[in-house]
Image 1 (cartoon, helix red, strand yellow):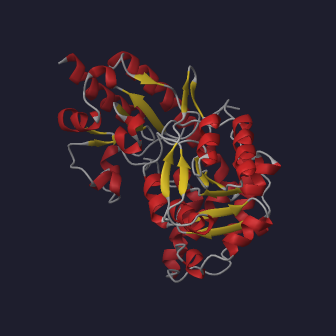
Image 2 (image 1 turned 45 degrees about the vertical axis):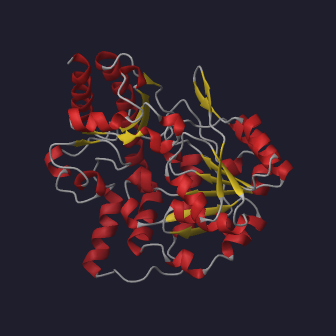
Image 3 (image 1 turned 90 degrees about the vertical axis):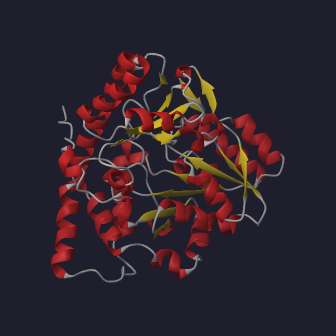
Length: 386
């Protein structure tokens, strides 16, 4: 059955938004940097939030808002992941959950493996938790990127005491294979090291790729793993503050359960309301339409780059709406986003912020209309022609 792609809102409406994407730069800049999408909210979310406003339901988040139950159902339907409800907890956002878990599984000064190029807050998160970043870059293959299991094994043998995984990976859009995740779990278990998996982009996996939740990869993964996730990237809810923490086993769940009460208390009430509406079956059709739109856009971007930036290197992501593009062939320096912003009036994310592997790269958010994406790439292409 064909699915009608979701249509992005028109530019004049988007410029009335007051979020980071639409206020960081002036009206002459086309923004493609931060991970916000340009679509209207899913109808079920709009109805739930509108009703809350009508009721003045703007108080504290209740102790049992229904987050656990709806997430378990969503995970089963959308991710083919059977989650033990007693292992599910919540907090304000994914990075906050990662920090709080990291603080309990490492000692100050211990090293934590991250896999660049990777979401910039990963570096800050490790430091906030008192750790030291241990870089084990992804391995580049002919078809994309994959976990460097030998490098991770060596890092753990050298004393690193935790692993911070991005699954699916940001910025490359890589959906790690179940085999690589099992291998990672076996290595971590052998060294007695926990794995904390950020899985916020999981619901946006594009066929034929198949997402494997880390905690579903193997018994070893469940024995040493934690997952932290949210529907905020899928439904554009970052400002409402709600995320999920899942323990792989009773032991991990007990560690999360013992976190200070304010970790859960930080969850936004509107975040909880929106999360529940997003995770119910009535929002599934909206997600399917979003995926159709993003699948179309990742292919449109391939065509646009081929036409206007033929020396750019880009592999369509397995998941999400973020494109990792190597434009180093154009000689625009280590951080080409600066020149592109200045001369083309297009804001892409700065590649070097993702690690040294990001030099010469930009990250492009294609969660927008195809026409807006076309305008942006044509503007950048004009820099080459000139």
